[in-house]
View 1 (cartoon, rainbow, N blue to C red):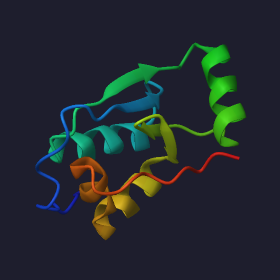
View 2 (cartoon, rainbow, N blue to C red; view 1 turned 30 degrees about the vertical axis):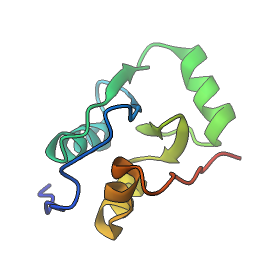
View 3 (cartoon, rainbow, N blue to C red; view 1 turned 90 degrees about the horizontal axis):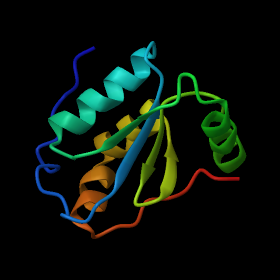
Length: 107
Protein backbone atom coordinates (compact mmCIF):
# COMPACT_ATOMS: atom_id res chain seq x y z
CA UNK A 1 0.00 0.00 0.00
CA UNK A 2 1.43 3.37 -0.98
CA UNK A 3 0.99 6.28 1.40
CA UNK A 4 1.08 9.87 0.22
CA UNK A 5 3.42 11.94 2.34
CA UNK A 6 1.89 14.77 4.26
CA UNK A 7 4.86 17.12 4.45
CA UNK A 8 3.27 19.07 7.30
CA UNK A 9 4.07 16.19 9.65
CA UNK A 10 7.83 16.46 9.70
CA UNK A 11 8.35 18.04 13.12
CA UNK A 12 6.99 16.64 16.36
CA UNK A 13 7.16 17.51 20.02
CA UNK A 14 10.02 15.81 21.78
CA UNK A 15 7.68 14.73 24.58
CA UNK A 16 5.01 13.18 22.34
CA UNK A 17 4.17 9.64 23.44
CA UNK A 18 2.84 7.21 20.83
CA UNK A 19 2.03 3.61 21.68
CA UNK A 20 1.00 1.15 19.02
CA UNK A 21 -0.47 -2.16 20.20
CA UNK A 22 -0.03 -4.81 17.53
CA UNK A 23 0.24 -8.48 16.70
CA UNK A 24 2.93 -10.10 14.61
CA UNK A 25 0.58 -11.10 11.76
CA UNK A 26 -1.36 -7.85 11.36
CA UNK A 27 -1.02 -6.05 8.01
CA UNK A 28 -2.79 -2.95 9.31
CA UNK A 29 -0.24 -2.82 12.12
CA UNK A 30 2.58 -2.80 9.56
CA UNK A 31 0.83 -0.01 7.65
CA UNK A 32 0.43 2.07 10.81
CA UNK A 33 4.11 1.60 11.69
CA UNK A 34 5.07 2.60 8.15
CA UNK A 35 2.96 5.75 8.27
CA UNK A 36 4.36 6.81 11.66
CA UNK A 37 7.92 6.10 10.49
CA UNK A 38 7.41 8.08 7.26
CA UNK A 39 6.17 11.00 9.35
CA UNK A 40 9.25 10.64 11.58
CA UNK A 41 7.02 10.15 14.61
CA UNK A 42 8.74 7.86 17.13
CA UNK A 43 6.50 5.23 18.69
CA UNK A 44 6.63 2.34 21.09
CA UNK A 45 5.30 -0.91 19.66
CA UNK A 46 3.70 -3.31 22.12
CA UNK A 47 3.20 -6.78 20.68
CA UNK A 48 0.14 -8.26 22.35
CA UNK A 49 -0.03 -11.39 20.18
CA UNK A 50 0.18 -13.72 23.17
CA UNK A 51 -0.94 -11.32 25.91
CA UNK A 52 -4.61 -11.91 26.69
CA UNK A 53 -4.52 -9.50 29.65
CA UNK A 54 -3.35 -6.58 27.50
CA UNK A 55 -5.85 -7.45 24.76
CA UNK A 56 -8.68 -7.43 27.31
CA UNK A 57 -7.50 -4.08 28.73
CA UNK A 58 -7.59 -2.63 25.20
CA UNK A 59 -11.16 -3.91 24.73
CA UNK A 60 -12.15 -2.44 28.10
CA UNK A 61 -10.59 0.92 27.23
CA UNK A 62 -11.61 1.22 23.58
CA UNK A 63 -14.49 -1.18 22.99
CA UNK A 64 -12.52 -2.64 20.09
CA UNK A 65 -11.03 -6.10 19.68
CA UNK A 66 -8.94 -5.26 16.63
CA UNK A 67 -5.32 -4.22 16.26
CA UNK A 68 -3.58 -1.97 15.87
CA UNK A 69 -4.81 0.19 18.68
CA UNK A 70 -2.93 3.47 18.76
CA UNK A 71 -2.58 5.85 21.67
CA UNK A 72 -1.36 9.43 21.22
CA UNK A 73 -0.27 11.00 24.51
CA UNK A 74 -2.28 8.36 26.38
CA UNK A 75 -5.45 8.97 24.33
CA UNK A 76 -6.81 6.00 22.34
CA UNK A 77 -7.38 7.27 18.80
CA UNK A 78 -8.30 3.96 17.16
CA UNK A 79 -6.62 1.84 14.53
CA UNK A 80 -4.84 2.32 11.23
CA UNK A 81 -7.85 3.74 9.38
CA UNK A 82 -8.31 6.32 12.14
CA UNK A 83 -4.60 7.22 12.04
CA UNK A 84 -4.72 7.57 8.25
CA UNK A 85 -7.78 9.82 8.50
CA UNK A 86 -5.95 12.05 11.02
CA UNK A 87 -2.94 12.18 8.71
CA UNK A 88 -4.90 13.03 5.58
CA UNK A 89 -6.88 15.77 7.36
CA UNK A 90 -3.73 17.39 8.78
CA UNK A 91 -4.84 16.69 12.35
CA UNK A 92 -1.93 14.31 12.97
CA UNK A 93 0.51 17.11 12.11
CA UNK A 94 -1.30 19.45 14.50
CA UNK A 95 -1.24 16.87 17.28
CA UNK A 96 2.45 16.18 16.65
CA UNK A 97 3.18 19.91 16.74
CA UNK A 98 1.28 20.29 20.00
CA UNK A 99 -1.32 22.69 18.63
CA UNK A 100 -4.20 20.22 18.92
CA UNK A 101 -5.13 17.46 21.35
CA UNK A 102 -6.11 14.00 20.10
CA UNK A 103 -9.74 12.94 20.40
CA UNK A 104 -10.49 9.71 22.21
CA UNK A 105 -12.47 6.79 20.80
CA UNK A 106 -12.84 5.40 24.34
CA UNK A 107 -16.22 4.33 25.55
